[in-house]
Structures are given as C-alpha cells and as structure tokens.
Length: 221
Image 1 (cartoon, rainbow, N blue to C red):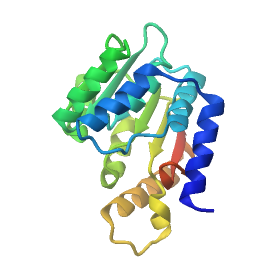
Image 2 (image 1 turned 60 degrees about the vertical axis):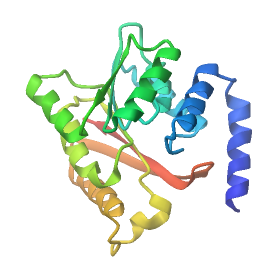
Image 3 (image 1 turned 120 degrees about the vertical axis):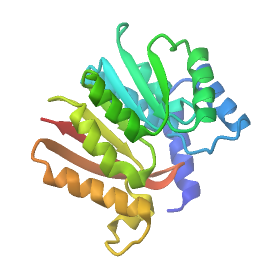
C-alpha cells in the first residue's frame, strides 16, 4: 500500500458518505488563499468529530487549535440550538480567517474564537469559573499536549469526551529515544492518560489523505 492508494480510498469513502457542502469547501478555499497551512482534518475525520459530539449529546465544546475554522464548523454543527463552542487560536491572522469562515457557515451565534496562548486562556477559564465542557478537541501544538491535558481535565466533568489529534506522528511516537519535542509531548500525554484512574482511553492509528497518523479518545469518569 502507498499514499496514493490511501488518498484514493479516502476520496471514495468521502464520496459515499458525504454530500457537497458549500460552507466547508469555501472554508478550505479561503484558508488556502490566506496562506494557512493545509493541516486541517480530512472531511471524513471532520464528520467523525461531528458524530462523536452528537453521540455525546454535547452542549459545550472546547477546541484547541482553530486554524481556519474547518473542524470548528464540523463540531459546531453537532450542537443543539442553545449550545456553545469555544475555540482557541494563538495566531490572530488564523483566527480572523476562521471567524470569516464561521460567519459564512452561519455559526457565529454559537462559536467564539479566543485569541492567545492556550495555556493562559485555559488558566483564565479556571480562575473565572467557566463551566465544564462536554467535548474537547485537542489539535494544537503537540509538545504542549501534556499541559493542555492537565488543564482540560480540570475543565471537564464525568462523561466529558476528549479527542486528541495527530498522536501517531508517522509512527515516531513509538520511539522512546526520540528527541522530537512533539513526540516527547505526545508520549508524555499518553503517560498521563495511562496514570489517571479517572480517564478511560484508547487510540487509533490511521492512514489516508493526511498520511499516517491517528487520534486518541478519552472519557472522563
């Protein structure tokens, strides 16, 4: 098997399970035009996020790593009419692109884009007594995953679902001797999950249009 076959398979699956979506396609187009890196989730991954949030019955969603708002749109569509989504982005330009995409999708009423360092923002949420979230999607810098996990667990409650993207790193996460800060961050993240008796987790490796990677899913008890 090779990457060309993985991409062809993803295209087939998306063709059979999804319908054309103007808002999502426009979000990707604007992100490209504005020079954002093409590191958004694949369409079938975005739909999986939406379905997981729907199955959870999420009313409050937290996302770390907005980029151009593509995954944000998928997740926001899982919310009920009175639901809310907070998405954190460190780069102002990316946040601006995301806001435009979110507005085009008709979701500005339920989505708030917060600009700044995610750790600082999460700590502010804790100080301000922000209510816990039902669903959390981690898709920001991987070296900081341990710190993000420490904080989002404090912003969770029993039943909260935490999905973390890009946790395979083309298999490098299995290398205990790696000096890559992202690999070290992900390995520490997994160590924290394994040591926490109040979290049940699994992880899946994937291949597709985004290469060889994968994600973890955790439920807080």
